Length: 326
Image (cartoon, rainbow, N blue to C red; front, top):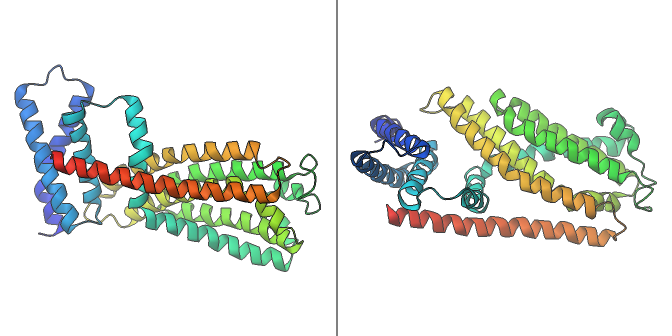
């Protein structure tokens, strides 16, 4: 059985289960014993379909769809609708990591697009520092002074420059995931252009021998910010790809599914921006040594790695429990 036959044969029962889930989430007043039996039977069928799909169509959208459908039904049957706080904890500790692992290729592509723009502008400004003022917005370009970087923190413009970059990055993250609706074209542009901005600054300070100090003011918060941008950009690219190559589904269906996933991914990046903002407010503009700032950056990398590792373990545990219960 190919994927088209599989979807066509079982789509009606999945839609039925979706309807029951929606009804149970809204109200249970008019639910009869027969409805509960039907719901349970549809849940068991969907669980078997998920197992089949994981075996024969592991990389297809239908597997992700069934995994989410079975998960919702499982929560209703065995957890009686977990509390809002538990839902939030589950989302950030488990589900968000699962979404990241599902679309890691698109996150990687987003990072490569950013690096492409960064390397190109770095080389351009390195050859001629005046190119910086043609690349950056006027207010940012005028605030850049290589003689001030690394001096007394109270007299440099690095805080202003860093704030401008953070504001730009948040705007890019919001636009990047939403721009997937343009078939990913605008997402690609935003990622490349954002890379061009960072690369231009890096080339400028490299030219004046200030690269070490420059990155000390960028990486403590920048690693977390850029990770969030790559995630948001990957979500936009995924949406664009699915609209361009919808497979056995309609573009309307893909838009609905991928928009929902993109919103979830963007929501998951909000804590990253909060963490980046705290670091930028209390670490970046201080008189701490450049070495300490690099240590902070290293700790953010370790923190991100640990978060993914722990989230992956929790995800496997959750999936194993769901399989056993079904």
